[in-house]
Length: 80
Image (cartoon, rainbow, N blue to C red):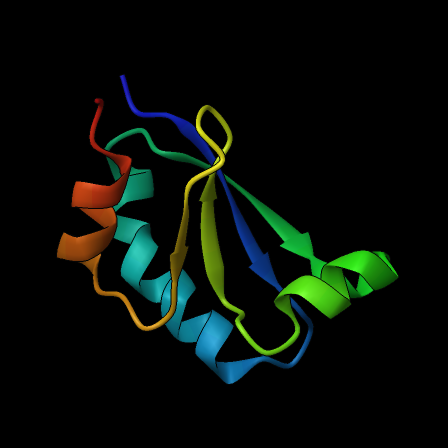
């Protein structure tokens, strides 16, 4: 079973749109991704403002920074 994840992003981020495109094949096979806008909290902007998009596993807290492709994301979310 694939872990639940968050994609940390913000409005108007073209890299975030590219990351979403890379993740769509994984969503099609059952990966659950919550898109989180870092602009909602100042702490998130401070932590992730220069790093987004970031794929974050909710089960382990592990983070995969951009750039990544579909294959790298698949390895990242593979069950431990």
